[in-house]
Length: 321
Image (cartoon, rainbow, N blue to C red; front, side, top):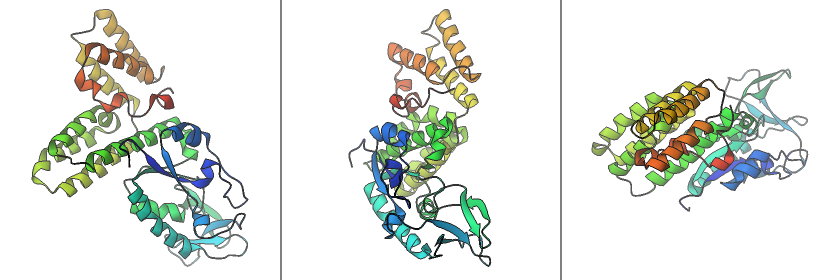
């Protein structure tokens, strides 16, 4: 895989392909037209994968009356045909090829009995639904690939959830580049240093925990270090970057210019950071000024911080208030 290639799994219908039960699609503009410029899609339709036709009978999740919470079946809505075993087997068989391909994330179809990640309808035998399920295919992938960034397309309409997912997606690619190469403790230290401000904006405790891991890495098994660092790092980024924590990061970065900026410049930058903290302006505004000063005064430490550019600026993920 080219070093900068990002492969992500995606529900086929989200790309505009007519594979749904009614021969329709659910093309998602952000996924295809915006994110699609920076990733390579690996499209999967589990229903087609197990041999179901297009069009086909609709399916749903059903919890038998005598079943425990996890024993959920996938059945046809009219015929009651049970597709559970076929779907679970297909999901298990799909994991290895995704790993081999170097997948960095996955976008599922919201509400799908195969692909939904959250609050999927599960019907009782009497027909009454609850919203506490997860699609069978998505459940297997989430269990087998717990560190992989995953999201539903419906939740990507939320600016905070969208930025968090894309941030984790590009971070996962950086981790793969690091650990699939001939990494050393020195390169791990450099990676951890470059991720400092981003981690502090998301979850300072994670940065501290990873710092301890890096400090002890020299005497530990390399595979264990890589696995623990990856899991902890991605779990930390799963916490949303809050305005308060991000403000702390911006103020910390501003401190690197105390000997460069005059009083008016300091006042301007401080005011922008405060306006961001009060949610009057988007994050991109103070970040843009900081990046200008980083280039102007050649502050190499800050220039290396992924916080300043964790994803392509063209996605405009930091342009919302």
